[in-house]
Image (cartoon, rainbow, N blue to C red; front, side):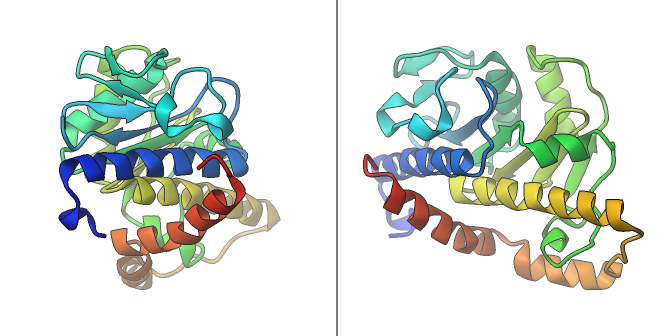
Length: 244
């Protein structure tokens, strides 16, 4: 069933399940670290609200019924628990600035953090990295832990119309027109950061020529390909998580 064929309630159920699947996938990838990290999904019934994982809960144990629905002022209107203040400050501004964005993902992944300290964009070193060529930005200002909406607004402004932003000395953030897209772009981008760190440490990498990188991006950087790539991730999560 495609999103166009789902009722708003069915789409809500779908997004909530995919959000939990994405959180479980992030746990399996080692992206969970303490209480940091958050993935959000816009609510189809109330588009100015979004679902988010509860603050302080391990990604690998979040269930659909644990998700919190947050309004435009940061209040929890469905669910029981607290919202990560940084999660609200960043995600609320992104959802507000990008109405077409359904989901956003940010965690403190190891390779994303390491690469973010370099203050530079990803190079088109590999075919996979081409998915982000000229489609991600670098937010150069590190102003401490993001706890206010103004910093969230600045991050959203830097993100612009791109699928991802590298937050200097902080990590990665990705967005998409579905939970699957945002989650896949994060998984893929963190691996691209790992590959570039390894290549840079080994020598002087050979970059893919710009026109070829753009052509590759049109093929592997599309929303449809992101959803396709997330399918085996979802299958693995569902086959290894009996409670889902």
